[in-house]
Length: 310
Ligand code: 13P
Ligand code: SF4
Image 1 (cartoon, helix red, strand yellow):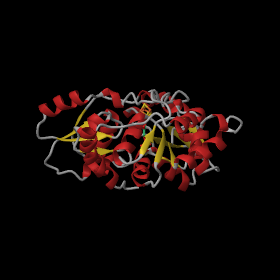
Image 2: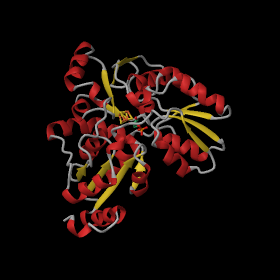
Image 3: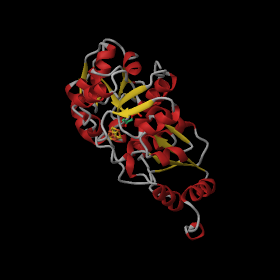
Image 4: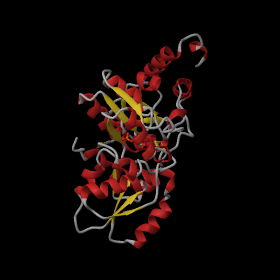
């Protein structure tokens, strides 16, 4: 199949292949700029999950990481979900296994389990509810006050939710290496250069970094907030891929990454060439075994229903 496309440019090739395969391309806000630009839809984890559940396309090419493609496969079992690089994983999602969660549940038999969407399908299957950083606070707030809550795997998102809801959560010590690399010193240094800047931080950041932020937001919420703001400078404490999306949303303001080191190597594994190969060879198909998918779906259905406050 590739022979006929040899002389075409990557974007034209992708467009043709997309039509042939009746495919849609979904991209996360951390993807390389050229992939954000070619995607049919770009967004945060919650918006992408909703899109995957609703699309009429037969094939979803997921430009993101494995847990996102798995979520799409669970929410749209009749569709073919392709992840262009099979090694694009999320280290935080792999910080807790289903077995570890089961033994935590045994220690707290009456607790409800909320898992962050950045988790494996097996962990979702052992959870009562799933959430993203956009709706974690609202989801936890909706749970009965007399029940203990286990929150996995991100300790930093968990602490943010505990603080916002006033509820004590049983946390797992997972973390995102890309977000915890951003330091208090990074924010203070950027503030010296841009004293008037609004600091936006993702809840996955460490507590000292969040303590210096004006706004704690998911990536989608950052785009909405900056798009509506009249501020001239923003210090952005999250993965640097978001800067491209922020500039597209608001070309009047300047967006300063809190740290140039905050790069998620897994998100950057997706390339134009790999998207072409994915569509040509229909790989890598992400399939979740039915017994896991059915259980995980219950936790995910609730996630897509709960609306964030903003
Ligand atoms: P968002 O849901 O805010 O896009 O975050 C996803 C993620 O992986 C953050 O590291
Ligand atoms: Fe996972 Fe962190 Fe990359 Fe998000 S930025 S996908 S949490 S490793």
